[in-house]
Image 1 (cartoon, rainbow, N blue to C red):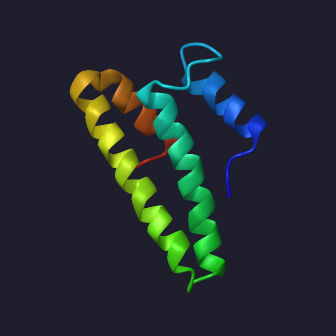
Image 2: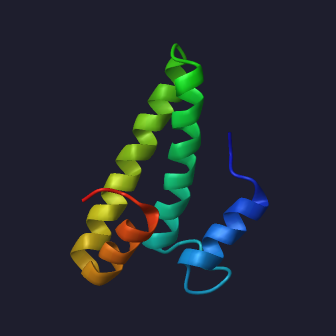
Image 3: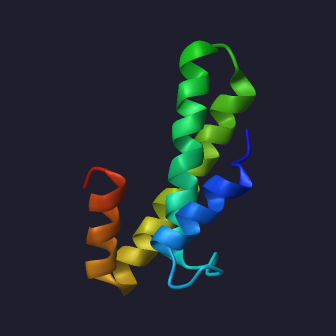
Length: 89
């Protein structure tokens, strides 16, 4: 359930500093959020899929650590990212 090339490029353009900026924390959080949304929808239909559930937990942990890094180093960017992605906090 990987992201399609077009979806990934639109997310990178929206949250990155340039069209090729895939390494910044904001872009990584946005990409992880999109994958988390897709896995959540998959798990609603397939409740017994243990591998997908484990993958979801791993992705949530990575996103959480990236958000903590962003909060420590660039608070205004963190707050704007949370608001634009619709995440709580």
